Amino acid sequence: MSTTIIAHRGASRSAPENTMSAFEHAYQSGAEGIETDVQLTKDNVPVLMHDERLNRTTNSSGYLKDYTFSQLQQLDAGSWFSRKYSGEKILSLDELLQWAHNKSLYLNIELKNNKIDYKNLENIVVDMISQFRLQNCTTISTFNPKSVERLSAITKQTGIALLTSKRRRNPVENAKQLGASAVHIKYRLLSKRLIQQCKRENMRVRVYTVNRPSRMKRCFFYRCDGIFTDIPDQALDYRQQL
Ligand code: G3P
Ligand code: CA
Image (tube, rainbow, N blue to C red; front, side, top):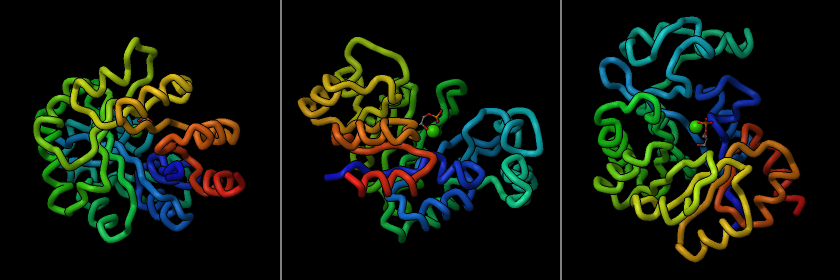
């Protein structure tokens, strides 16, 4: 199996991250997977945004958790990127799954619950994925080890990944013990040893965020299960050249 090219927050070099334009761009350019970030609104709607605050990627400010979904829908999530994208909306997870469910895409839904541990987020997301029957092509990931444990208690069908950005003694065994089926690692943690451990433990390994050609090639050489990249179109070209 070749390394899956996963569009990080959509094709986020070409369009504003986590918006429909970014996902559409990724899909049209042939990306095999989509990565996104999920948080809960004040009225418990799962929505797609990376930062806890609205400041960087919308025309508003403050914490996302303090806004209802209908309030968030009034905001502009595209102008910060380029005037061309003004009026782009903050999406709900439901809207993304509706768009994705007939597209044969791999999905990685990252729970952004390491700083704010949103109550019941795991159940809400797992239920929604099963409503759309997307369990077999989806991985839910999080940096929060407790959340990995909660996920593994409520789903056996959906992939679960522990995200890791720091060097730890036994990252693969640790993730497996928590109930994960994959580790999603920052590029600098990639090593031959880690790949071998993953193979031994039957754990998937995916790497973020891989934008440099030399790094992509190393991931392909190691046969990583996936890379998260902001430039899926270029990654597809590099993979084809191998
Ligand atoms: O899911 C991989 C990667 O997106 C994790 O880091 O900060 O881009 O959400 P971040
Ligand atoms: Ca992410």
